[in-house]
Image (cartoon, rainbow, N blue to C red; front, side):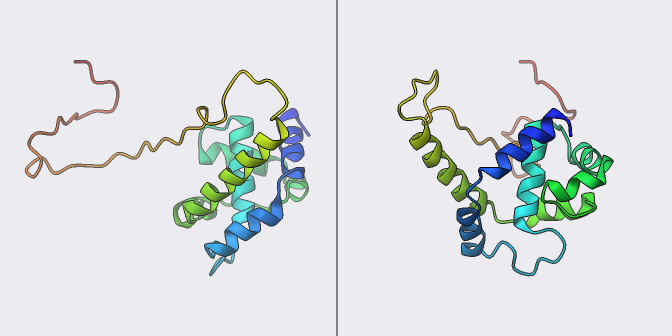
Length: 153
């Protein structure tokens, strides 16, 4: 195992899985799911975050490179990008939102006596980079760019 997998394994060992499952059950995250459970999806996305993967394709290629390690990471024997993409599209975001709140509360209790260089209240951001196409005939006031990139004003 390389360092990223070792860190991932350590992080997964300390996760409060009962509380995660309670969040999944509350929002029926595994209802009508046959290929990739919410827990497995969370593990894939956490692996991508910890190891600095930049795309779903790169994440799946990296995980499938050594199939013998997937079992030890708590993942199915072979990951398929379409299954992970489907889970990414259809899983209720509230599951992960509630679990993040649980993890923040736990981190606060663990580090309340330790002086830190940051404040938990001000350091967590959720950014949505979704692009919404506008119909210019309905929104003539909208500045529209024809190419991707930086708009220089």
